[in-house]
Each structure stands twice: as structure tokens, then as C-alpha cells.
Length: 185
Image 1 (cartoon, rainbow, N blue to C red):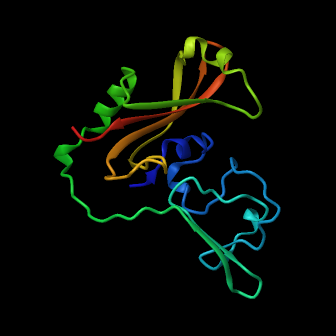
Image 2 (cartoon, helix red, strand yellow):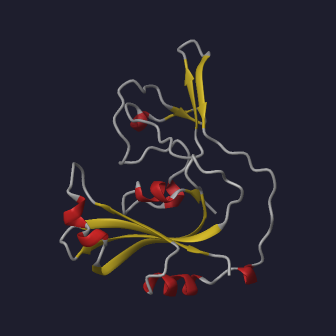
């Protein structure tokens, strides 16, 4: 199962799947950085990644290498896993139960962001601080482990169902959403 953060799932386009977000992979959502050149991943040249910033929002190790092959910098935000427990499938809710929870607007965690680039007046997008729309399109529905923000102590990784998609709000704005439903009964 993927280990991801809610924010990282929203940084993917609606066509990209979470499984494609391997460490170091560059998506359309990353910024340009002309100082990044001669990119290699697992020893293979990644020409399309030249000039693109590295994703570093979670579980990332970035190594800066000089032209002579010596290491200049190492930056890491990896967390240590000290033990693991096994869950029986009978301890988990079914995908259908998770979908029903989603349809009943009872997700444990939900995040909605406006589509597009630039500055937007959020009071126009989210009238009365709510995101109300009539139809949502699910682009991904997957069992994941949730990574908390880096400023939060991580004592355990718990399984969640991630439901990602897009919608048009009643305010007329297009948005992307990600919602999490706890998978443990």
C-alpha cells in the first residue's frame, strides 16, 4: 500500500494515479528549477526531469552530487519505522462501506482545493467556508497508509481509504478533492 500525505494526493493531476508518485518522480505540479540538471534515478538518466524541482513533501532523500562524483549535500525527511503489526482483513471495513461513508459526507478527513493557477479569492470559491457541489467525479479510490505532516510525531501508520476526484462547486469553481475514511473498524 502506498504511504502518502493528503496534500501530496492533491498535488497530482486528475489523470495521475497515486501509484505513479514514486519517490523522486516529477509530476506536472512541480516548479521549474533551472539549477537541477543531469538528473538520474536508479542510475538512469531522466532527461524530462532536468530543470524541474524535486518533490520533497514526504519520505524524501535528496542527494546533491558534484561533477566529480563526490557528495555535496544530503537532505532527508524519512521517518524510522521501529515495529510492525499485522491486521486481519476482518478488522477492516470493505471498500463498499468506505464508499457509502464517502457518499454520506462522513469522511474522517477531507480537503478541497481550487483548480488552476494564480491567486483566487477563497471567499468566492467557498461560500460560508463550505464546498458545496452537486456531482463529484472519483478519479482514484485506494487503500493507503496516511503520512502525517512533518511537524507531527508519527507513532503509527494506519490504513485509510483515499478517495480523490474533481467537481464543480455551486459557486461555479472547479475543485479537486481528497477524502480519507479510516479503514479499521
